[in-house]
Image 1 (cartoon, helix red, strand yellow):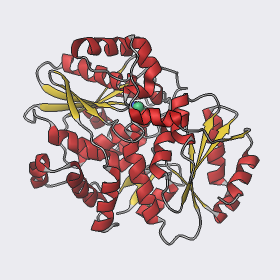
Image 2 (cartoon, protein in one colour):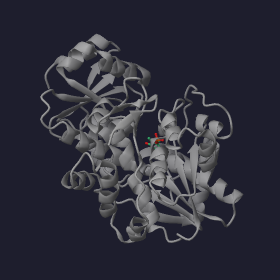
Image 3 (cartoon, protein in one colour):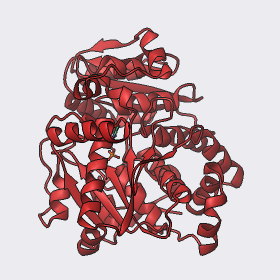
Length: 434
Ligand SMILES: *Cc1c(COP(=O)(O)O)cnc(C)c1O
């Protein structure tokens, strides 16, 4: 299978090139040149398959031309080491819990798949592979834990000093080994700029292979379609129309859901749920797509003013804006709405939402109220509430107990080098052997 750039459908590359480059040279996003549609027989068997079994079949359809059966098995087995239970919260409303992985957020799925696929594609490569990541929190932890101890790959994480929570920081700075952390005396945008400069540095790129593991990368994006198949396979009310609500920031997660639907999964409506960073809901309500500066909210992993996967969503609908607007409904909510929903759900059913899942819940609830009795709904719960303990405690007036895995991270010792906002110093660091 080849992958084309959303900026130029004639520009096509191999799987290896797409994964290693991340972004196309014309700044477009890579897309599979054709999307395989799975046969009816697959969907009939789906409820009897395990998560891994369905994973082999879906990934075979997407990567079968480039990877052999054993490699696909290895990739899926490495990725799906934790469950994604579908939990009934209210009548016709289910939470798809994606937070049972090592860093307790859905990004673990993509990061684990990406690290394994990269190391497979790099076999025999002489240059050292260095994965550069600029993070404001969650991406750093998922990528660090996904790539930890992966042979032949060094990971360099840049993060803004004092701008990430202690819990987030400890999830990547305490690992050591092939995970190297740089605490930059600046803000997230400074980290991002230094990483971009390194990708454009010709001399540096001749010496080493620099790559990225952000959500643009198909190796992180595509495997996220698996849990949509799994959710449907476990849903009791298959006779009803299905609406799926995705709390979104960069819109990779929603895009993966649409990919599953394009492969034949019977999802009738998607709901793009955001906080007040609402450029996509605005587009869905008829405005032009226009990037905006991001606004801080309590669902901070979705504080994105220029969602990088937008053109990928459009491409999935054949660049047909009317079709996109018909299949995807947009809703946005402010922090007040989010907090109120967290309290109401806790009171009604005892279920504790994290602020991101609460936005997904709200989008679904609003849609179901506008279409009474017609749909069953699933919202994606993207992080464990313990990851956002201070917000959850304050909103709900509780002292949430942290899961054991998060407590373990807190016990570790932080290892990070401090650097100023200075590309030459960063470059020198990359040039040092590690
Ligand atoms: C990254 C993240 C999101 C947003 O996902 P996108 O794929 O960027 O839309 C939502 N919730 C949590 C907890 C996240 O970490």
